[in-house]
Length: 134
Image (cartoon, rainbow, N blue to C red; front, top):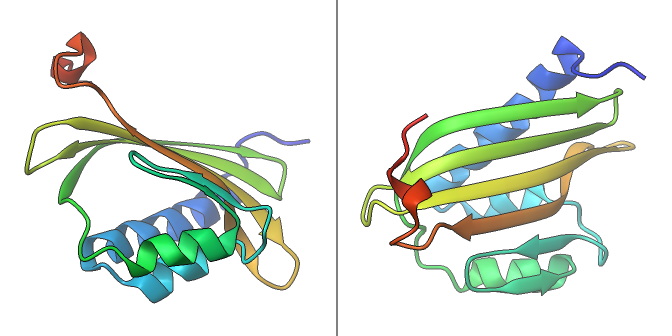
């Protein structure tokens, strides 16, 4: 198994960038399309625990807009041709809080890379890591 094949990293980055644009624009259709449409898909957010695509879609339908954020760092690792993990460190520009987002993507036959698991969290406001710049 090849780790970090540049073509797989580029493919995962394309999915990542599309998702980030959709967050900024609150494009629910693209956000939903980025996830595997399956009951086994999981998304843990800063305020929610969602199991299955229907729960994820219901959550997204209730979001008026996402907090504005600025990317601080992106790290992507690919495992073979069919699995990639993206890690995002960002700053919420409205509060200054530091957020972290991890997505596990898998190549689904006929669909390409889809997010099968995601985890979003914020550092506590008094967490010393909040002030670190990388």
